[in-house]
Image (cartoon, rainbow, N blue to C red; front, side, top):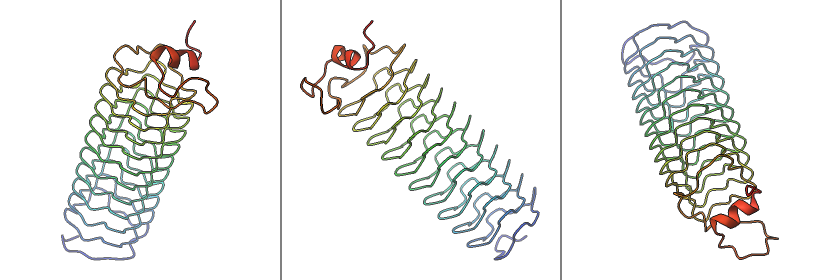
Length: 254
């Protein structure tokens, strides 16, 4: 396939390990296509339909996948460094041990996506929907996750050091054992989230909602702005809580 190849209906076709560098596949129907190990670096896949496609081990670095459908696609071990995935749909895609370093996933649909052990450092997820996402042991170091929706998502043992999580919706999320050192969670909503054993050194929680949060085994001495969290409306004290009040509210004073 040449670099300027243009096609529309490629459903179910086998391009495994093909050389597709810079290929023009904008708007192509690649539903169920086999692209494992293919080199799609720099390819134009804007608006392409890759629903259920097998892209395991594929090289998609610098590829333009904006607006593409990758629902239930297999991206395990794929390389998507510096790829453009803005407004793409990765709902329930498998992307274990994939690489998204410096990639753009703004306004991306990532509901139920499996990102276990993936490298998403320096990536941008602003306004992405990560509801039910499995991000266990995923590397989000220095990533931007502003205004994400991640209700009931799992970030167990994930690395979120220096990440920006301002205005993030993390209701009922699991952050057990994750690294949030120097992370910015200003105005984030962590209602009933589980942060047991998490590293919160110098993390910022200014105006965050920590109502019902679990903090078992967490060291709070170096956490910033824990005295400026949102509390239940029926709380009898002022909204400005001390660390002591926070621990008391969450039944961690024993």
